[in-house]
Image (cartoon, rainbow, N blue to C red):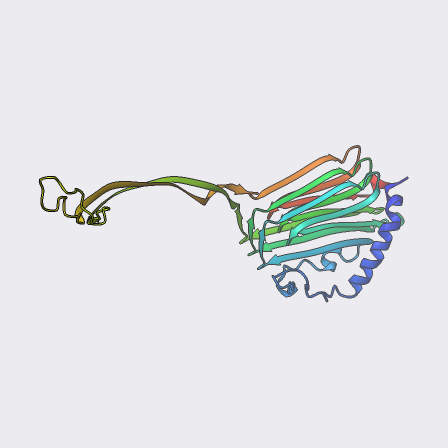
Length: 340
């Protein structure tokens, strides 16, 4: 089968739609709502303007197709604390045919796009031409990201195997990543076939702070103490006689008077006391001491078992982190000698 015949059904439909748009004068009624600028309004009047449809399609072309994309993100602020952004595509788009576009993202402010433009002109128009244009503009301006113990993981596993045609896969985790897959194909039965695929990505004023969170461990501290002292005391004491006043003795043979001691009396005494004493003990307390970093900022992007035995054009973008820019563009033009 001729390439022209294979492309006809889809391309003719696209060409009809683009012809209606061209007759409308290329009016842009989309004022850019939802393109960012922090509050979700892009204000398209400030966005870069692409060429008009007439300029891209060249008036007089037998068939034309155009895709024009403008994505902008500016003045946004993102703060992630202990955040995990995981974007994964697994076991997808295997054995597909035709044109496939896949976008998968986790995080904030990421821009992804898949665009295809196909045009074909019938062989009967010898002087006809086919023009296919795909254009994308992505801007990333004055955005700020602060990551604290943040993990961004983007992975592609078992994707796009055994297929044919055109496939574009974008996968990102993190913030303000830009990814783009463009395809433009023009097939003409006449003398002229033009195909153009362009991607314009810009990033400026992006501020990124990656910080880990300090971790602490609890330590117990012990200590000992000792104290010593002395004491001194003095005083007086009265010692009482326990004879109850009765004196001893009796009458002697030759003693004419009363014998004995004549009764007991109380006695006074003084005393002094000296001594030393000591005290000892153990003290404990708990303190918090630094113990490394908890989950420092980690960015992982992995591709595994992707695009095996694929036939045609395949573009895969996989990114983890902040402010990455990736693009895959393909432009094919076939004139009459190549397609008839």
